[in-house]
Length: 402
Image (cartoon, rainbow, N blue to C red; front, side):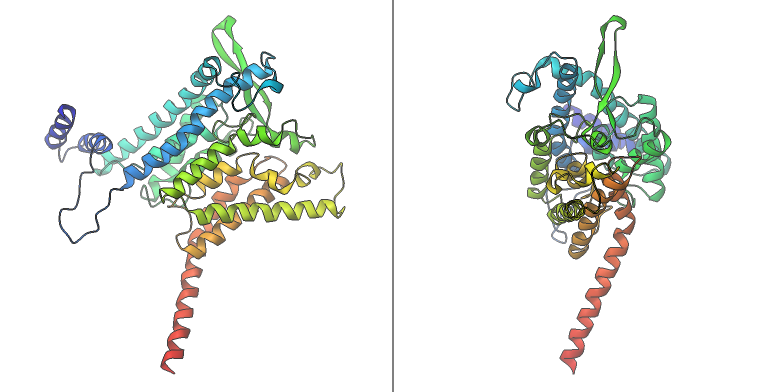
């Protein structure tokens, strides 16, 4: 209670000044919102923007922690200190302090830079515009470290975060007004500005250089990078499902992503319509590619054969498809708002993700570009859905009055 009273006192003391938004943000983050209803003219509920964001963060934490263990595990596996044949989800070789420690000290700086730069800009804009600090970046700040290469230079990440917050959100008016997912805007900036670091076929998997006292980045192939070069998978289906594979921090464990998705659906924050339709869209595109291969329209040795011949359902557990579908395609601000629109939007996200994944020779992944593209078209989809509903009601009205 002492801290709460002190924050309230500081907030009242600096009310009307440039520092008011900063104290207000800290107070509302830890305690209640600044404004609450007290009469019967409003619907009262326990959820608000802050609690919604915190719920999504809770769904992301397991992926973050698993990613730390997996980063260390991939290091020791590549170094030959662990036998992959004896590994497994319940193996003592995976859940070790050494694995976690190595991953923690490599990943936690990404989290610090992401939140430090992003929230710093949010506070700056709130101070300049004299409005409350928006909680929208709470989730974006956690998403960014989970979708970038683990060896990305921190200065590069800082530049990208600044671009994503300012250009991707603030210029549109802040949280709730942006048309593109901020986290994907940050990753897209990195992809186009620093393509050699974001090729998508290499990730950090090992490299503790003890002699010079720092961690060095030695790249290893991702599954999609290997398939894009015409190679066959070296991992079992269960390894891919559990997440014992190289990849960005948060995208490897389909199991934890699935549990996180169910949690978001249960809390009514994530749209099950978008998730389900995205999966259907991906499966349809995968089946089409499998049919093309089976019909010998494209033969082995072709540049795209390995990805096209991948069993259609395996596309769901490799790359960033699952993570993008659950945590970014369902963004309530940038996704479609109507129920029918969500089905269309989600289906096209999944369909285009696999299409881009297979036919994009420069970047063996597609979910980021697919979601950003559909973010742009989401308002158009909703427009025609609403327009179609109006026409149907007009027809029913004419029938009744006839």
